[in-house]
Image (cartoon, rainbow, N blue to C red; front, side, top):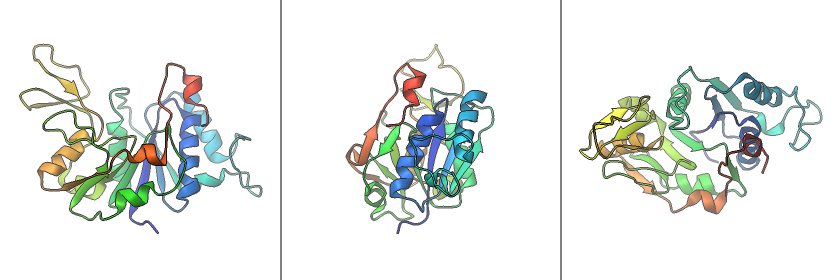
Amino acid sequence: MIKDVTAVTINWLTARRTIGAIDSFKKFYPDIPIMVVDDASNERDKGDFMGIYNGTQYRPDLEYDPDTEKLKHLEGVTFIQAPDLNVHPRSHGACVDEAIKAMNTRWMFHFHSDYRLTKPGLLEELMDGLDETYCGAGDNKTRHAQCKALVSVAAMYNAEAGKKYNISFKPVIYYNDDTISEYPGSMDYRREGGIAIEAGSYYIGKLNQLGYKIKWVPTPHDRYGVHMRWNGNIDDWNKIF
């Protein structure tokens, strides 16, 4: 049994899609707690999520407990409303920070709301051999010499180490001279080579610089599930896979 891990996903105008992501995860990992952090969605989207979450809005395409009419796979799910710090679509990092502050496990499994697990084994592979000397496990997506990234579609992070050193998931900009400017804010037009990095890259990079190891696992999310990805239609984003 996998222990000492909390799963985290972010909701941003994707209530039904977020529910689908949770549903797919809980089918294979029913005992792992999940935190859903809302990233300043509008009231309609939050109402849609909470209606399903509380069982007041029945969805026949999801699996309910016939005795309680509650969605079976929402047991053990915690909902967090992030402060008004929305910097999407640049990053959900501020919301992940809220989840890390609230959890009490060493490991955080972060997965996108448009990701669907289709078979078990992902967490087992990511966590095999992990101990407190690692900062995380996932696929390599390095974009910068000083940025040791993990693919954030579905990856494992050492939340305990991040708390210890007060390292944030909040997005940053790397420049060619290796200096860092923190978001939110615009890139400095007077400087060259600025690149906004993905949520978690700075987090992993800083812990790696402090001596923590990274476990690279080739394309783990593709082998255990489907990344639905976004297009320009919010109704399509919200469809159950």
